Image 1 (cartoon, rainbow, N blue to C red):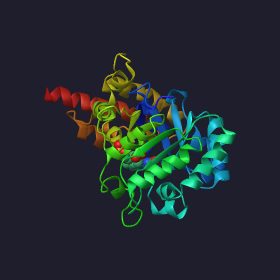
Image 2 (tube, rainbow, N blue to C red):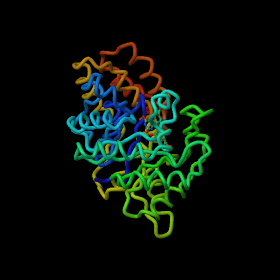
Image 3 (tube, rainbow, N blue to C red):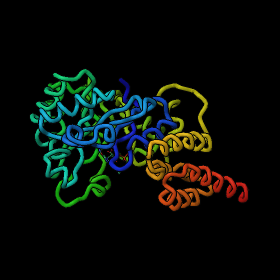
Length: 331
Ligand SMILES: Cc1cc2nc3c(=O)[nH]c(=O)nc-3n(C[C@H](O)[C@H](O)[C@H](O)COP(=O)(O)O)c2cc1C
């Protein structure tokens, strides 16, 4: 199970269509679903929440919850759907999530998390991993993260994805909680130094595969096991096009942006047949031409046309023609 390069779980972003699109940039990156609340998995529309395309493998289901029995049921359903990993969300700071007693507030309850992990692991065979912060509120992160990892690893967790900043549960909203508390990669390295046998994946503020590779091996003698990138991939997905070469020694020919759009046109045709509105797919593609001439035109054509012509896959081809003719004129 490789976590060398992971694409982060992002609510309202990494739905199955987004993951299908991200897979165009890397065959090997590990993809994560949006956070799904355990109760929704048990009582909600399972196919809608959990369905995915085979090309998405390796793909992890991220679950939020804090009741061992409920989490176990949800994890079992996830395994039956074919996910490669169950990831527990111990990092989300939102008020709604706190009210349900899950997400980042669980960093203060490592024994409960350990119990959840033990119960889940009794029932499923796929790995159970944790995505957490380095701490919360005014707790000392050195102590809090160490105690959290020590307790939960004894319950059988061997992979931690650590968003290297605290979550401030009172006073900052989720967006601020991804920007204001300072990043501290050294605490993540400290955990790897203490338990070299664990897989420790660094997350937070990494802008490219190249930068991620540098961060992994920056500290003398300590090599982290991987990186997870979120916003950088969303904003500029083509920025990770060389990830398979950098992280997985895979020298395959890289597709151009235009080739990727052409493949997505075929995908849109299938979506329309399945009554999926095209804007659900195209909204993940706004950043594809980030930094290129005509990027604004591409983005505005898609954001204007796709919601109005929700069952017309031709919109994507038109957007592509627009940017190509703009680039030709400018040349
Ligand atoms: C729009 C958005 C939604 C997010 N949703 C989730 C989520 O569902 N589960 C989770 O663990 N983290 C979530 N995160 C946090 C990311 O997974 C990641 O930890 C964070 O953005 C830091 O990584 P980055 O600097 O590479 O973006 C979300 C982030 C963004 C920007």
